[in-house]
Amino acid sequence: MAHPHGKYADFEGLRDQAVTLRRQGYSLRQIRDELQVHNKEILQRLVEGEPPPEWTKRPRAKDDLREKARDLRRQGWTYNQIQAELGCSKSSVSLWVRDLPTPEPRCTPEEHRARMNAGLARLRAEQDRERQETKQAAAASIGALSDRELFITGVALYWAEGTKDKPHARREGVEFVNSDPGTINVFLAWLDLPEVSRDRLNCRVMIHESADVDAAEHYWADLIGINRSLLGRTLLKKHNPQTVRKNVGDTYRGCLGIRVRKSAELYRRIEGSWYGIVEAATAADLENRT
Image (cartoon, rainbow, N blue to C red):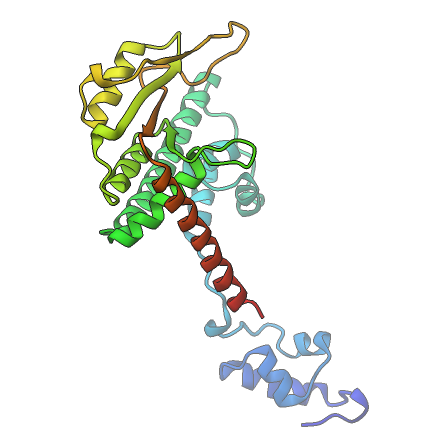
């Protein structure tokens, strides 16, 4: 029904039609289009008192949390306690329960701190669980590596962490240093592809002199499967008493350096392969651009 000049003279008649449509499950937009009422205020007045149909209501993922927050507030819980218990933001708690009366204190400061600490512990435990689930799912998605995939991985790993040749310093030799045992294992597996035997490797530990050097040497020797006596001379980093070190404790084992003897040809293969990866990645990127 059109309304010349934007006037709605027969308001009651329009309202009757709007209410009928509303009860048939029409949304405001559908009623607007059906009755040609484009004035928002008039449209709202036409359906005043008529609830919107269920299908137009957006689902609210936090409805359960909101109800829990309101229940806890009625029990006398503070905003901070509810936040810690439910793991949501304080602003959300405030929005959900601000119409409820402020509760009287029901516990001592010590009890309050204990509740807060317990809630935070639960929150952190849940966050840790989510982190582990994400990491485990990502690890499981990798599956077995082909030789090509391992080779490309090793080249990228070396180019990020290994010694590289420079125009001002010719270093065409394979030398790799890292503190992560997983990274060392991947590099050693990669060396098996070009059939680099273990007797071509010179390995040595690099560590702060204030650390447990003996334990670190045993750890790295066991990891790479050689006798400790075959390790080169450990490189000790002098300790600066004015520096507060964070890499301390039983898990600190320094770094392992691996140098491959007679490896100029292998280094050139690494460098060439890396440039091939860059070229292929750049070409793919250009193809995807519009």
